Image (cartoon, rainbow, N blue to C red):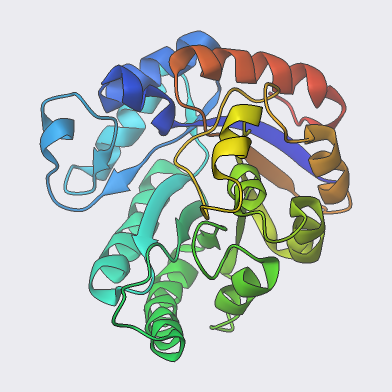
Length: 282
């Protein structure tokens, strides 16, 4: 049966203007054993002045590992979100993330199709994504890392659209990162039925809850959102999510995506209690 490990996406400290290391330290103090860092290519201004949590892949890859080991947390996955429709941006980011993942000891690179340019039709966007994933999958295979695509855009807002992209390239290294909040907000299909359809491909979960107010304001109007509310304070039925995934015979990370430090603390408490029967050693 599936067993879950709870992780924390580093977006939780964006609103607090924290650096990567400060975010790692706070996550450890809250009780998290795993984190999901965001990574980028190049040098990003806010990160350089320690106001933003994203980690530059221009740095020595062992630096990320050193920081996490210093604070006693592991790296569950990398938030390597790259515009699959834009190969010139996505290929270097995903391939470098695969190399970084080898240094820091994680197996999952999370991404999505991102925003469709107005000048590209559906055929062209899918050909661009096929090219991106073909190149990235070769590197992922060498490093034995999974590229996990999540529902977050105009195509992945349905499970069928998501699977069409996942299966553009015949590779066992391209799988699904199910985002519980994005699938709910899209409002196109029942999110639990959608999860059941893609279950066999789910290797990672973004544990994002959606408040009643957020749902009333945006459901059916958007295809995703950066963060949600604290897990357990929204509309997602977490036990139902666990029950759908239960037949899968592998460990899966539940990476909490919330907007504040306080929400991260409450999310961990809730998930440990609500999913106690489904958790791996925490």
